[in-house]
Image (cartoon, rainbow, N blue to C red):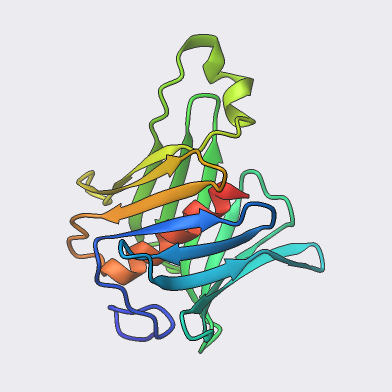
Length: 190
């Protein structure tokens, strides 16, 4: 495993970044608050599996997110370091009629964060309509001890955008948590 402060050689010490989806294609760009490109990715489909290879601003492969299936509404994804081809994180999505819930774990099962949507559509609208809604969600990021560490805030615009903010990562390396949160934002956008 590389140092606990980077993921596949990529390091991010800022507090926030933005994930933007291309208007017509499943391509994404991750930028810092000044608009500088940090990462890019696009959806690749091969042999019935979807993969999102993330590249840094120089075009070098940093990590990728692999799914078990092409269209995996609820399931498990693996964030894999490009340099070693070793799993770094396991991202698991659970859906119910009231919320979306993600967990970010290490491959050994150590939980590093939970993300829960807090979209405020009440009553009957929180049923089937919510599951298929095109509107971006907002997630609260919490540490395993329940401490609030950040947010992923969806914005509806011609290009879906998610603002990822990691405020207090505590013992969790900021880059690791940011990589997991960025991957969740991309997966929520497809």
